[in-house]
Every structure is written in C-alpha cells, then in structure tokens.
Image 1 (cartoon, rainbow, N blue to C red):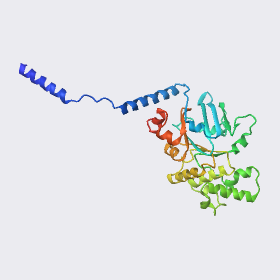
Image 2 (cartoon, one colour):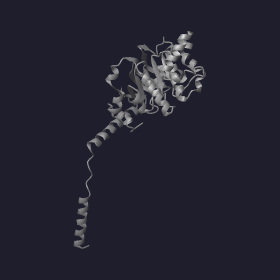
Image 3 (tube, one colour):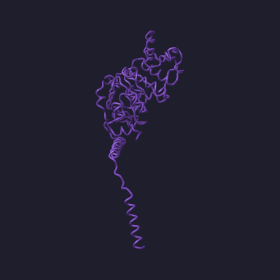
Image 4 (cartoon, rainbow, N blue to C red):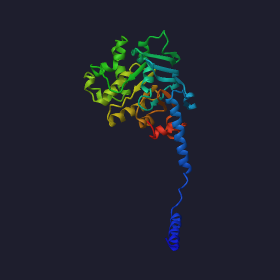
Length: 314
C-alpha cells in the first residue's frame, strides 16, 4: 500500500473518531435510582435468606390510640414459618390496609386476630395480640365470645340462606335477643350503615341470596357490624366484585371510618391508597414499612417500599 493510501485511511479513522461522541456519564438521578434499587434488593435478599430485618414504622402510627396491639407475633404452619416477629399497633377508628405480594402473610396475620387459624391443626404461634389491652390468646378467654367482638368479611360474599332481615340480626339471634323492637332497630341501623337500606327496605323478607354480588357483600358488612364489633376485619372484600360494586364498598368504608376500627387485606394498591388511613407493606412474612398511607405511597422511607408501590417488584 502506498504512503498516500495509508495517510488517507489514517485521516478517515481520525475523522470517524471525532464524529463519534464519547458515552455520556450517568445522570445523578439515574445513579440514585440504581443505588435505591440496589439497597432494596439487598434488604429483600436478607429477608429471603432468613434474616430478621427491623421494620420501618412511622411515629405517627405509634402516636395513635391503638385498639389492637400486635407484638412480636410469629406463626408456623407445621415446620414452615409464615410470619416473623410482627409488631404493629392498629389505630382506633381508622382504616388500616395490609398490602404486599401474594403469599406474604397478609391473610395469615388477619385471621390470627380472631383466631380463625386455630381451626388449622398444624398452626403454632409465638408473641401476642391484645384487643383493648386483653390478650386474644389468653387461656382464660372464650374464643367464641372473642369472635363476637370482631366482625369478619371474606373475599367472596357469604350471605346465609335466610331472609335479608334474618341475615342482619343473626349475631343478636345467637346471643338470645328476642326483643322485636331492638331487632328491628338493629336491622335498619346496620343496613343504613352499610348503605343498603334504601335498596332493600321493602324486601326484608326476601332471601339474601337473591341480591347482586355487591349487595350481598354489603349485606355481609351489615351483619358484621350489627353487634357493634370492636374491630372489623376485611379479607379482600372487593376481589370478587365488579368496579361499580367495588366503588360502593370503598365509599362505605369511608363512611364507617371513625365509628369502626377497620383492618383490611387488599391486593389492590390503588384501593389501599384510596380508602385507608394507614398502610403496612409485608414481604415473605415480614413487616417492611408501616405508616401514613399518603406518605407511604408518595415518599416512603424505604427504597423497597418505593420499588413495590412503583411496580418494580411484586
């Protein structure tokens, strides 16, 4: 190759190098995002490895008057541990939502409050839960009476095969109440509180099974609050409902706030953001972060919380 040809190739190579920009340095925002994801991943990996990691709890929650206190609560199904040292107060007169990926222990925790997990033979627990200062696991407590102090609403509406009227007053019936005036007043009060009275007041003798799915769920809520429970437990109450019925249930929860202390499980983060005062994020049986709902969804304390609510895991 001639000297002129070599010089020509060298010139082209030099011009190409000048025309190709050097890679830009990552922006500070990108570096912060990578660092946050790394921190979140590290904490989750520690939990996955079996390490007990302290939860981040907003002082605002601790300042509330607690109707229910959960203290270092752990639960096993046989040899498999499902909950790890959960400590959290449930504020009185507020709506508290439990969120987290499937299998993180939300329903196991909820069903421990009224001791429904007692029905599973292999279950064992450690720690305590106190309802208005009284341990729900005390050997002296009557479990049936304890469950009467709490209302429970499940994922799928479960009205009894009886009239709307009898569905609502059922808790009073099993307590032996026979006063017709009291029963009528309780039925109307509960149905009004459940935003169902105007829709069924002329159909009280009809079967509760004839109502729509959303109406059945509100009927179950009316039945749950008929005995003035100290805590209302909701296990994904809208998961089987259409958007219109879901909206009515969410409006109802807003109306019940203040009169009732509500602890609910939901897989719908948007629902938690709309209806709850406080939200707790769980992961693999551990409590990660617990605090004011607006704060947790907008400016959470932990990077893994931000990663979950923004959809980067779960």
